[in-house]
Length: 76
Image (cartoon, rainbow, N blue to C red; front, side, top):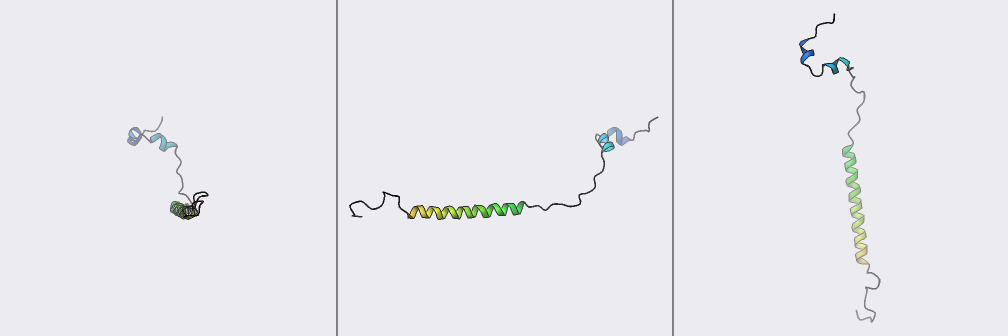
């Protein structure tokens, strides 16, 4: 005859899970959280790209487009 079930076994919704689950040991090594490093790298890259874009914008504004310089008659 099977053993008597405890009160916990009747009301416990996870009883079947607890019967078959094997306990896991804690992890031996944890990896560091590198989200901050990743975010810092993204910020540096965006700042560098923004600076490069600003330099490129200044260069295009300083150089007149061909055909839009002084008038051909030399009066300007």
